[in-house]
Image (cartoon, rainbow, N blue to C red; front, side, top):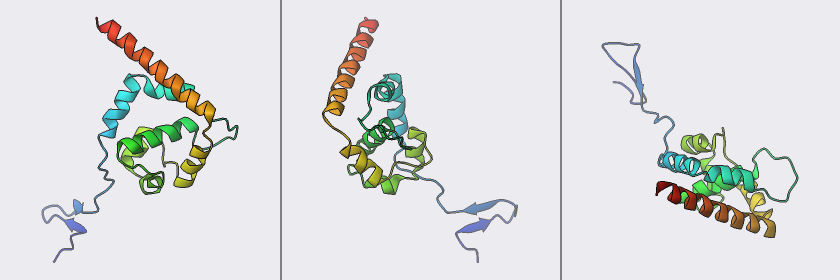
Length: 141
């Protein structure tokens, strides 16, 4: 009797089949959203225009933390503590181009660093994205 975890073919013993599941994710649609964000310039806007007033050097940068939270919210992971469950998720790591995500404590500290200046930065990002949208609409005409 064969065990389902690893099964060898009788015709070719070198081929082994296993049922580990590998690296799976139910969030593959985020790859399309990442492409959309890149093509519209949204990712570049965040990288260029968003920074908290904290001068510390960090492994997880502010713009990366913001993009992580945006992708998490789009995927219905609304709480920052979902980051601990997603830290090794292959799709999240691919779209954020990282080996592991920022943890829940890192995201909590990130939110605590936000102040009035970051709100003004969000307003600037919104205005810039509206300008980009307006230019794209005019170019189509």
